[in-house]
View 1: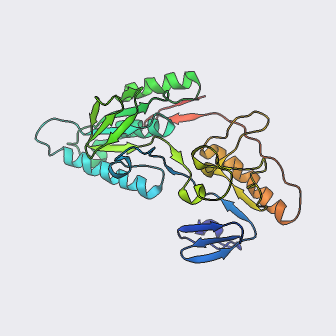
View 2 (view 1 turned 135 degrees about the vertical axis):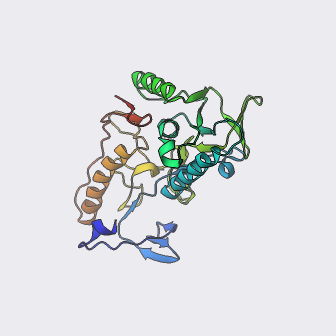
View 3 (view 1 turned 180 degrees about the vertical axis):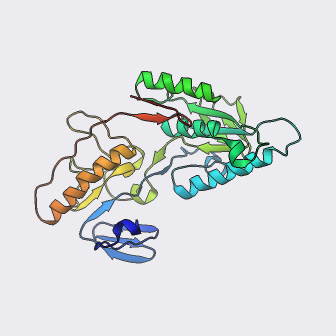
Amino acid sequence: IRRVLEGTRVRFREGEVEAIDLPTRRVRVGGEDLPFRALAICLGSVPAYYGVPGAREFTHMVYRLPAAQRLASALRELEATSATWPTSRRPEVVVVGGGSTGTEVAAEIATVPWARIAGHDVRTPQVRLVTGSVPFLAGLHPALIRHARELLGRAGVEMVEGRNVARVEADRLQLDDRVTELPFDLCVWAAGVQAPDLLRNLPLPHGHAGRLKVEPTLEVPGHPGVFSVGDTVEFEDPETHLVAPATAQAALSEASTAGANLVARWFGKPLRAYRYREKGTIVSVGRNAASGT
């Protein structure tokens, strides 16, 4: 980011956002209050644990780079350790979440060349994907879902469908039938996301999972010059009534509109309405494999 901004008038600040005060138009970062005339809220999302006991404590997640790096390190360590186990048992990895994130993570773990990464004596992990009660890849095209399911089968991923996780312990999941338990050596939580508490606590209209409801221009209601894009926003296209998903594709297109409107608001020009247009969907299903429409 610093390299991209070289030679511009943009000042880059890195720090924890602690508060957003809309009435006084200030953002607190690292203990310092930064005044703003215009604001773009692009904080992304955090995992939604749905109150499941143990989910936060005993699982990994991939929604932030440091967390993904910790997961990668844990996987490498698990694979290296498995070569010393006295039996032929394979490492057991459970991924919770039947959306695109869970699908991609499960397939990647199952198909990565572990022998090259962790050593020639590793044991390929047994990967299970717990999709929950929501249908697998719900909302995507049926042909994409069928193909993704086929690719997961080829990768050796075992699917556990129709049941939610009721409890997570240090080495096992308990499903909501209160009978089924799935042991694991490592568990990844990819069951969904929500807006950060910082945004959920703002006195603004909120939608599903605490996301901010915005005007058709992506401006926050009642606060001219304050815009929100990406995972933090719930936007329903007024023409198609499609809700823009929490994807990079949607965030990029929203950013273009919000950026133009921020400048327009600054100079007193008319703002334009955002229109969400789906360009297609691709779900990565392991190395050199994907399903799309």
